[in-house]
Length: 559
Image: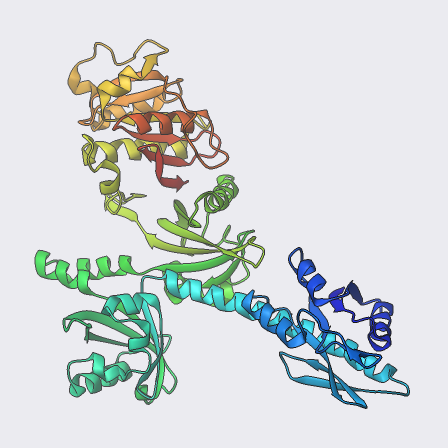
């Protein structure tokens, strides 16, 4: 049903038009007797189309003086940001009237006498076409916003060039070079290189270095606004594979960190390539049910799929293992997106490649919303953080994020690593086939003990110190067995297990956590808010691992 706001000037002609529209059964008409009344109605609701007069008519030779005519009304709508299509009834001459759809320039002439029903039907079609056109414009806007979100979320610079001129650039590319967008658009690409010879060299390199997808690759140094240069890797999808200068879409990777690491550590070429591989981003888009709608080239290469094999398929059974906890993980992701004010959530989850290899991916997720603010899709940007260095065992690497957790605390990195990996084993294995939930509080031991009390006899009391160090591999199975008991583990920053079975006595009323988190999570958030301890919670219901610091969630791992 199409909703129309009809501004009636009480003339017979407009009354006929209104009656005809109402009888079609496809149009719902709401009447306003003046433009002033129409403005009041627009404050409370929206309409698909507005039908109004251009000027008030003469009555007995006297023209009404309205507070606003049709043209003034259009100007008012524009100042208010109201883009509702408007159809004006215009007086062209003493014997000719016209209906004009303002935004599109369409005009229908109504005769002053005779049968005007054909023109009324044209008007109905005009209203329908206007509504459909506006709907298409809204859908195109949503699609463009989704594309802009993807291009802005990636850390890679992207630009489009035609005939050597930059036509479009994304924000990361602008930031990379220190220019403004207006300073780059319209500029010749060769001016961002030191010499014309260097420009010609990378054009040749694009033709020589092509991958299996036909994309050209080249390395160069782009000149920044301050005159310095940044080492970059360029990848291009050319308009003409035989002539790069005609243009194409370019993806730019800032290789500054790569160059610094190479120069400082003199790493081997194989390790260097591995490091650079991990700097690439997996970009996936899916609907709220987990059905994949987009997979970038790097994601296809990483998971070893073709686009036809994943688009439209659910993440469960493709890149996510088919197990009971997955649905909980997707639900938790959606809750996080709604909870985080900026629309972002961070999760680490177990994924699987096509050949069955398990990998751990750190995902940054952003909600894509429709005009009503409802989440319609989720944009996921991931990086591989799998640790394969320990005798073939596949574990979650903490190298890229543990600094954030232990900084400015007394917790040693090796202690955090040891506790974290015990938590992952508890989450995955449980105990005797049953899921287990538990809590670890690491560091600031004195304050933690003051804000908790013992609820069972401490199993570690009286044992030799060397038998109470959490980094001791022989202690791991004992800790996993004791994880079934109520209460928290308290471990000092240097790895000494102080106690097991501590009940946290801190007030939790000031804690604000996402929906679905229980008493254990709230208690750990509260005690890390008033101490310098690091908290880790293993959820019994979902198996997820949550790391807390200063009352906040720093990392969530979905297993």
